[in-house]
Amino acid sequence: MNKQQIIRILSNHRHAHCFYLAKPLTLNAITKLIESSLPPHHATESLKSCVYENLLELQAQGEVLIGMGNQFCMAPPTVVTEDKTNSTGILFKGDRAYLKLAHQGLETKQPYDRTILHPKFQKFGWLEARLKNCQIRLLTVSDSVTQLPNPDYPKHSRLFGSEWLENPFCILQRTGSVQLYTPELGEGQWDRWQPTTQHQLVDRSLLRLPSGEYLWFEEAQMYELTPDEACLAMFWLDRQMGYPIPLAWDKTPGRLNLQKTSLHSTYAQWLWRLSEPDENQPRIRRFQPCHHPFVCEALARLGCELV
Image (cartoon, rainbow, N blue to C red; front, top):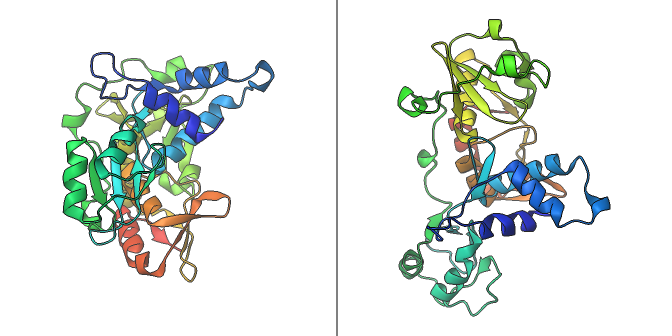
């Protein structure tokens, strides 16, 4: 099983009446589809966790979107270029159902499965117009970091309609514990999740269930959040309590350690595009010196502390 297999499954799963849209699949459904393609002796109990880890990495790369209820679908088709003056080799991300259209629209004369595109012309305006006709976005990673979202708690207008109607503490008494995000109890972000009880909850608490869903507790009601909303809430809680996330930053080689740290998908995609993975660790990123100021500004915007 590899990431390309997951991409194929999600890109081929379409809405019956809106074929231009990729349809979400649950983690369980994706795991079962992959398991059905493997010989019986290859199916293992660890397959589901392996699929989940690959989905998280694909989200960071801008390939996959994660929604509520552990549902996953391909991200909208997007072509990314370094800036408006450098379009010789550009990258396609997201829904592969549009990849052939991107090649045709840009007249690449390449095999239709290639995701690094070499368009016939490099002018940004021409690229933008051609891709727009194919319903594909064109983005530049050199856009200002001011477009990145700020850490924040979920607003009431967003929470309305996402109420969690069952008490997870009653349901999970035997199957697992509910975890509370508590900044002062752990140095790294993933270490800040601690088992909790219903009596320990205070207003504006962020919870995580063993199945991966995030809940927000406010005014005696629980609401389900998307992973992106939960990420922004985590960094907001860090800031409110005065415990910023420390990230290992080795400035000389430009190496940033993002292991055990979850980022909002917009931040992750932006950082991944500006960097290369360090050896066999995709969540340790290497940045060129020209990108260092942008990286520091973006992470300061999140409230991280580079150490």
